[in-house]
Image (tube, rainbow, N blue to C red; front, top):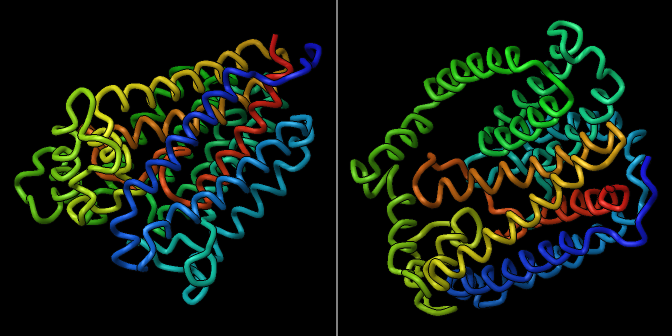
Length: 365
């Protein structure tokens, strides 16, 4: 193992703080109108976001100073706990319905989303499993099939909520860990074909998913129904131009664009801050992902390398899906933008995971 550095990756810390600061500002800007209308307090959402941001940053600094090898012994308990929570959330009367899915556990407006925690738990588990069985990963039955089975069970439980977006992020990050561990491309290619057929089956099983696909292909076929969100998102991005309409001057947040502070917050950012503001945020994400992958590549411990790859995968896949939806190149999935969108479970979980990544950066060459 490489010698521990005195400080974690400062570039990574700068990117995280920069993205988080932009997120807090944009949550207020995007939500102020709706918050005042619904609660009589324009600061309703941003105050909650600040609470979770403080909790998340605190958790990040704690995990940043906990040696990453300590997480190996907690990997199996964490994934078992998350499996239990995913089952509990499906029980009528215990799981809370929000946004068309039974994905939450909690009381009133405060709650946790177990599927969010499963993303990190699965990465912790796969990093432990595959680092201990690297010599078997090229074998399909004894090396690749066991982690795929665990992933499949978790994905099935998430889909019963249903929450395709979060499930897709978990699968994407997990497959990155498996690839980095040395899985054969032929096996992964065959798995990809199976996944395509499975996705077709999932779409056929739920009419609303088929509506999202058709709306993605041509949202103007149903401009007031399935295509409404995509159209309103483009109406926000288009007028933003190069420099935007100005911070706080969005038109689409006046009850035209649904979920402006969560799934479509990037649309409001592009409308108010233009191409320059959007490009700045994406550059910060690229900086974060680059420094994270640099850590994964240069750390000498296989467990640390797989763990870093998985955490970076969670961020990268979620950013790709969210931005793809917002600009109209992917169907609407209900995925938030990491560290930017309003949401307590996601924000706290991601900052905790990034703290682990920052600790890993201490051991990178």
